[in-house]
Structure formats: C-alpha cells, structure tokens
Amino acid sequence: MILGIETSCDETAAALVTGEGEIRASVVSSQADLHARYGGVVPEVASRRHLELVTPVIREALSEAGATLDDVDRVAVTQGPGLIGALLVGLAAAKAVAWARRLPLVPVDHLNGHVASLYLQPDPLEPPFLCLLASGGHTMLLDVRGHGEHELLGTTLDDAAGEAFDKGARLLGLGYPGGRELDRLARDGDPKAYAFPVARVPGLDFSFSGLKTALLYAVRDLTPEELEARKADLAASYQHAIVRALVERVREAAAQAGRETIAVVGGVAANSELRASLPDARLAPLALCTDNAAMIASAARFTPAVAYPGYLGLDAYASR
Ligand code: KG4
Ligand code: ZN
Image 1 (tube, protein in one colour):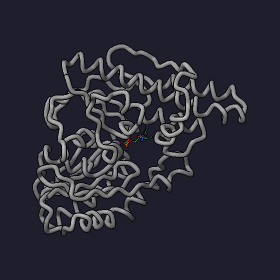
Image 2: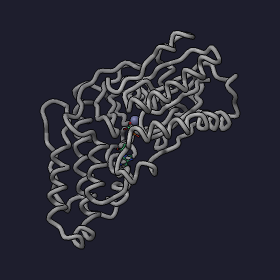
Image 3: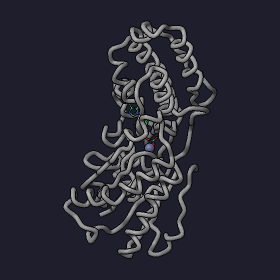
Image 4: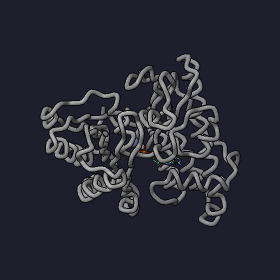
C-alpha cells in the first residue's frame, strides 16, 4: 500500500492507495475558511496549519483504511510545484514516516499527480490521451504518451484558468475560493448577456488576463443595485468565455496531436459548464479534481522510488 501526502497549497491531504490503484482512504482537510478573510491563501498561515493538521490527517487516512503503518510499503509526497513552506511540511512528514519505518520514498510532481488522478480504479484511463490540466496555478495542454511521460503543447501566458475564475469571483463579490461559487451563480444567469472577449494567442497557448479586465470594466459601470441584478448574467457570461477558450484549445490540441481521447484534470475540471461542454471527454471524478493525496499516491505507482535513507536530503521546489 502507498501512503500519499499532499500539502502544496491550502489542502492538507493524506491517502492510502494500493499498487493496483484502488483508493482505500482519501482524507482532505481544506484550509479555505482560514484564508477566506484574506481573499487568498496566505503562505505562512498555510504552512502553520499544515503543521497542525498533517499528523491527524495521516492518522485519519490510516483509520479510514483500517490500516496501520505496518501495511504501508511506500510513502509518496508532493515535492513541488507549490508554496515552498507548505511543501516542506508535507515533505518533512513523509521523510519522518519513511525513515522511521525504513521505507522507500517517492517524490511526486504535483502536476503529474493531477494527471494520475485518471489512473485510479474503478475505471483507469490508459495513455495515450490529450490532457487539459486546469487548476488554480496552471493551465496546460499535455500530450500524454505514457504513464508519467508527456509533452507540453500549450500553457497560459498570464493567469491560470482557476485564477481567472477566482479573480472574476472576487470582482463579483463572491467568497474565496471563488471558482465553485461562480459556477453555482452562473447556473441562474444568461451566458449570452455579455460578450466577453478571450484573446486568441498564437499556437496552443491561453491568455485570460484581458477577460478579467473586461469584467472589471463591466462591473465598474454598474451601480451596486444594478450589479446585484446582473450578477448571475455576469458570472454566466464570464464563465462561458473561459470554458469556450478551454474547449476550443483542447479540441485543437487533440486534433494536432492526433489523439482521440481528451481528458480534463485539476480544480477547474469540476466546473459544471466545462463538464457539460465536453461530453465525450474523460473527466477526473469530482472528488479527485481539486487537490488530494490519492492522485499523489497514484502518480507514485509510475515514479521511481528513492531508497532509504537517500531521500533525507531531498528538497522541495516552488516551480518547475
Ligand atoms: O487543483 P486545485 O485544487 O489546486 C491547484 O493545484 O491550483 O485547483 C483549484 C482551483 C481554484 O482556482 C478553484 O477556484 C478552481 O480550481 N475550481 C473551480 C471549480 N472548483 C474549483 N473553478 C471553476 N468551477 C468550479 N466548479
Ligand atoms: Zn493542484
């Protein structure tokens, strides 16, 4: 059994996954409430909270799986990218558990983790496929050729898709993190009410910063009463623009790479309009879209392990 640990941002997570990719336990403790009053994740606050939560979350995962550390053969942990202080808490916890039990440790790249959310039971996807990875920090088109083997075909030139959702939500006065709230509000609005532009940049890249400015201008022109009345329409039109850009680009990328299967992973894969717009795509299960440790343990199945005690010198990395 693989014990996975994930602390790259504001979710403290631990999971137990078998070598065949069956999830025995997956515990995610979100710090969203803690950061809400600041309107975003405060890195130092996140690190301190991870420190408090990491041991209880690992314990809870073990108890949910009806297992003990005796059942664990490998420890997997997110090494990066992410908030460096937050990552270090998970890495230190993973090293401690692995070292105490003389177990091997598997350092996992968070983005490989998101892709590996597709490799879990009961319906694992087999490469090759074209993968859209859309999260709070990344928007990537990956030609996935094998487990842990992919080529980057396109990425965002400015904001990530999830960041665009969060910034839009903030402009509309929704809570943090705003993506899910905006998604909910958009269901009551008209996606055609506003024609928000999405920049078409060359190649297979994305750009979302102009869209955010367009929303800012639209909001600025409204009185507080008008804003309240048009909020759902603004949300629906804004979301529609992001989703349209993602869907167009992922289809183009699949055609260019000659891939028949399109897959979507990452927090934005939870978006209801995106899911409805890609009915033929493989979408990560809702519980595995946003950050979790099951996907990290899943990636560890296809990542070389570092033998005891070689991993004690491993460092985390903030960006690739
Ligand atoms: O993958 P994730 O949990 O963390 C990162 O690795 O960044 O993604 C979080 C992002 C946030 O920007 C959040 O607003 C967005 O995913 N998100 C959504 C939805 N649920 C989460 N965006 C749009 N619609 C949703 N339903
Ligand atoms: Zn993530």
